[in-house]
Image 1: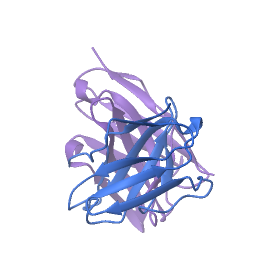
Image 2 (image 1 turned 45 degrees about the vertical axis):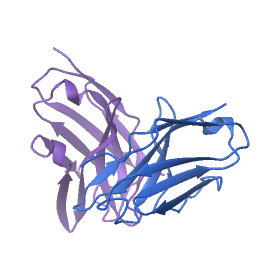
Image 3 (image 1 turned 120 degrees about the vertical axis):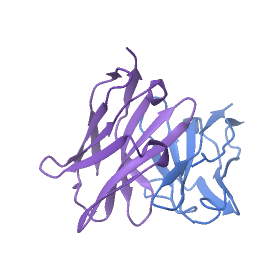
Length: 122
Length: 110
């Protein structure tokens, strides 16, 4: 059973960088049948897919157009985890952030982290 | 990428059936049979209940079923039970290695 454990600050100042980490157990970040995603939830937008990282002989990233210029998702094979960096945050980036495992065959998100509430405030 | 459109709320009595619609466009729901549905209880992580439009993961009750017609996918919950009360979100592959979710539907058991 895959478990995802998120960590990171819940408060970020406007214009600064939001950073979250997701530790994987029960799977590996290098699994070529999986992709490792970040999704956020806000009252105004519901769930929003932000991006993913995955390994298929080499590492790849895909990002949502809405955040493409500000987002970086990186794997860390030594710690079996992956991270989210969202730069230049604004009030609109306040949300609950989830990490999620995507299955390469079902194209669905079958395991989720517990969620991190991120507030953007000075 | 525009979000998929779901009703804000639906409700039903125990034992009844309800259907939640999820409307997208030609490039997401209409083009790909890669619609999934998630159940979310407040304060908990979403749980996958339907994938590839109609398939159920192991352990998910057969009271949950999915379908699709054109640009609209649907989730039906039959034999409503109090524990089914939750938020439900649809999701579709949108091409170009991107995904799009719906705005979510609050399902209330009366």
